[in-house]
Length: 192
Picture 1 (cartoon, rainbow, N blue to C red):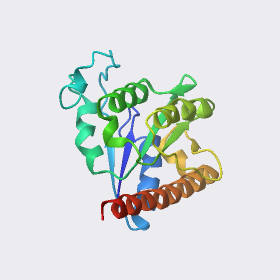
Picture 2 (picture 1 turned 45 degrees about the vertical axis):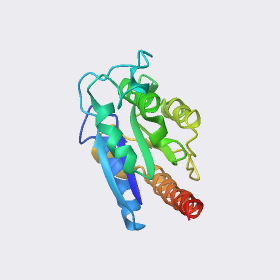
Picture 3 (picture 1 turned 90 degrees about the horizontal axis):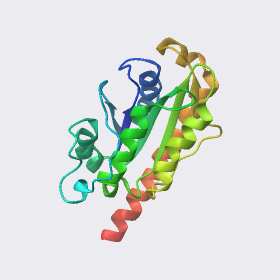
């Protein structure tokens, strides 16, 4: 099974990347394969509800959203991660998730996911709520843990020090693997 991890931080190798690396290592340890996708710094536009994506192959804006489309086709599960910006998800997270689900929601529907929020002080819960709404509105089962999938870190090297957050992240990844496996088996039995 393949896990697609989506980094919506402006920093390619910061705390958000470290958190996703931990989840990817756990997924791979369980027997799956994983890929971390970095939504490059630069403009990622919000959806303008033009509807062109419903008539073609993705969004007319040529950015991270269209780069994600083929990766979503082959993924069995997803983790979206965002740094906390001003008490909520990054603008990139909201733009990418909104446009991806509008233009390619059929490629994610019924596939499990969870969100991760990484921040130095506060705003983690608001960030998770913003991101998880996208899953709920697209019929994506949300994998859970024994606590929120939040990490208190301002820099890459701070992530591992949050042992409670890392533990919750690893457990959520295990539960995501279990859920993706059940869904894949059910999908395959329905075909046969």
